[in-house]
Image 1 (cartoon, rainbow, N blue to C red):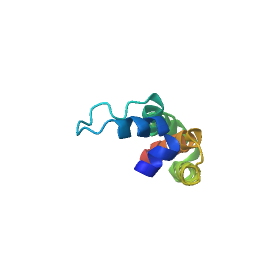
Image 2: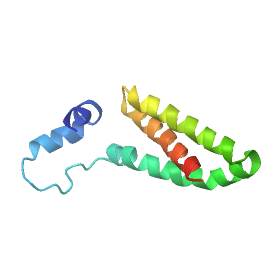
Image 3: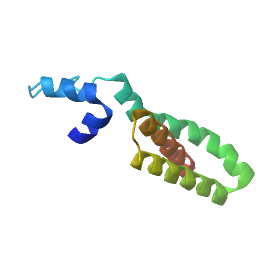
Image 4: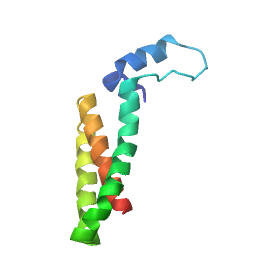
Length: 103
């Protein structure tokens, strides 16, 4: 996780390196890191609410195909991410894919 933190969350990495105690409490205190983590879950929640309407109108097969495409796009963006905003957008697309697949 250290190279990931160094590249995308350098302030969190510096804080982690400065604190050499064994206490893990508030070591990863960052709003950007929190947004990165929670974006998938919030997008999945939102998508699961929308997916029922889409499934009713287009059918289950197309709805799951659409969810798979969203998941694939999110994985590609996360795989080739160069900045934090790309990670967050990728996680949102992954969340929409999870929400649609959950339907």
